[in-house]
Length: 223
Image: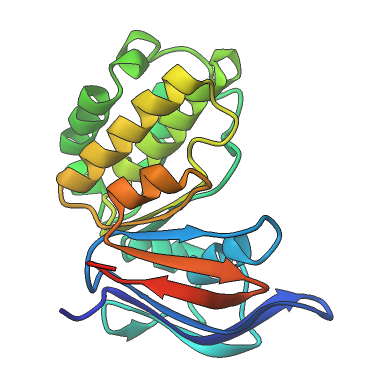
């Protein structure tokens, strides 16, 4: 099976500091991909490069057969590669309804707005109860639901989640993990960065250990 995403020998960093060292990996060849490893070793930087937020020093990113290395983040979102960053980066004075509408801004997502809104509400019933509330009034778990829901409104062909359960209480974490599993069962391929290895093993068909900006270990299905 051809991967939907290929990271080919990417080197990247910030200023003179190199974070990623000639890193290569695939997504979508076997199913969902899980990324794990020590903090500060390049996982978030890799996601930023994939989604066009950080330009690499060398190498290339191929999404569904197209080289997107030099594409803008807006163009990449429009192509259906959607990244939910770590830390609930939402506009605090917008309502949940506003966030969902913003998620569907791209031309490819707009025709599916009503359909995707129904999916988000089914996945996160709590959001329906707070539909007109401002983001700043929500709990951490609810804000994470809004972040993922907004991403789903973009009609993703590949969804990237950066530590979606970070800092959540155990009960809320379990609920969110179940929702992420449901997203996968709905046919959306995932790349997930997570420190909970048991969750990654349940969710993913392929794992990469990222250490010192490189792939230290690749674990394929059956291994």
